[in-house]
Length: 291
Ligand SMILES: Cc1cc2nc3c(=O)[nH]c(=O)nc-3n(C[C@H](O)[C@H](O)[C@H](O)COP(=O)(O)OP(=O)(O)OC[C@H]3O[C@@H](n4cnc5c(N)ncnc54)[C@H](O)[C@@H]3O)c2cc1C
Image 1 (cartoon, rainbow, N blue to C red):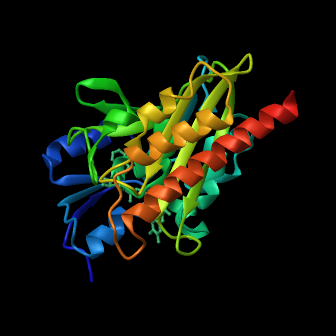
Image 2 (cartoon, rainbow, N blue to C red; image 1 turned 180 degrees about the vertical axis):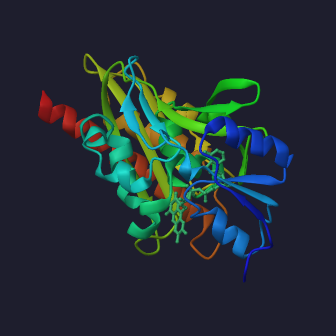
């Protein structure tokens, strides 16, 4: 199917893009990588009157460490850029594990991490990763700039808290205070598919103990699930078998899976438990090897 008719603008500055969104009065949409929006428009699930293509705006395609040590990922930073970034391999194990698991190489060449957060698909992988890492989104609109924690950015399936005339300009991952460890595991029916279940684990270690932990779940609820109780159960002690099993049980309890053609709710809950154990065992093993 062809999309409905729409007006197309490709502004060269953020201010111009924001003014266009404002003028659109809620009937305009930002176009970033187009890997989610264009299919929705072709199916006519989305019919914006105005498309504001941000790809001509310079300076939005970056991944860099700020003076505060935080990782800043611009709105036009593609999945493929993240997949190839040596910065992630050396300092962001959870992100490095997730990047090659997003879709397929063609989608990764165009799609963006920030676009994925904005799209707020419950099966989107990046939201879980960024929630587990305690990240936030910087949004800019006519009234200025604000920071929104990713755990509060998604307001429901395919919904975010941005005002109609705001643009998400970057995602920010705070600097780790301890030694970062973790990963991302994804159960998919075939390579390149959306997650049946995904689990992101991001921990920081200090002096043999876990000083910070984040566990978030993909595809097992109406939106990304921040498994807060499971994360907190890890903090303040070293990882051991009992603690890992307890955190995995709490994460499985936090999941709200539905039975569908991909598997039963009980099966998906069990996958959450298994993935949490597997990821935390890897963290514990790497600590043992380093000792
Ligand atoms: C075949 C296929 C397989 C896929 N598999 C996966 C997968 O396994 N895992 C996964 O996580 N994703 C998957 N995706 C989705 C993909 O990751 C998209 O790239 C991502 O969801 C959206 O990023 P985008 O840059 O393409 O956004 P777009 O499609 O351009 O936009 C998506 C939505 O976000 C809004 N938006 C985008 N950027 C901004 C911004 N800066 N400010 C405000 N609003 C904005 C748009 O208005 C739109 O509503 C798949 C897509 C396809 C086509």
